[in-house]
Image (cartoon, rainbow, N blue to C red; front, side, top):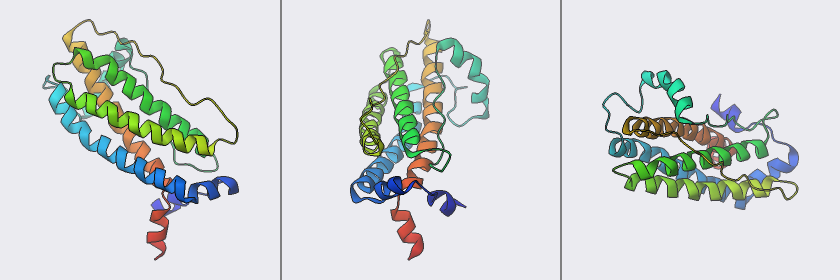
Length: 198
């Protein structure tokens, strides 16, 4: 099934673009960066979150939906693997927007955290990935279009508990969005096709 998703048909001009060497190099750099981001989320969570009940991979995280809304944490854009119904440009735009959203959320909460070294490193990795995604987006756009810009985020953080919950929920949401990003990038990575054919 994964092979089918990876080989999803693209419009002819997009297929040629995606299979191009330059595009594939950016895809590989992007996959490496998103893996680095995903691997650092757990350590970042351990460094920043001190409330015992806030666990990264907990079924209880779904119970914080109302609090996320109260604090002002917007939902991440929905990502899907590129297909006839979900264009390359749309996928890349949503990746860029979602990554910029999470970077803004981390930037908003980090001044209130006691330990922020890993959060700052995570923001830098997200910035680097956004640069790569925007390069692919620019290549995919038929005409010059304004690149997605970061959405300003104003979180309501009256106390330490809200700061901890905001940081926790941002990392939980970033982890889920990062996993979706990984699936989308895997669908664009043609080196996998070559491996399965040999």
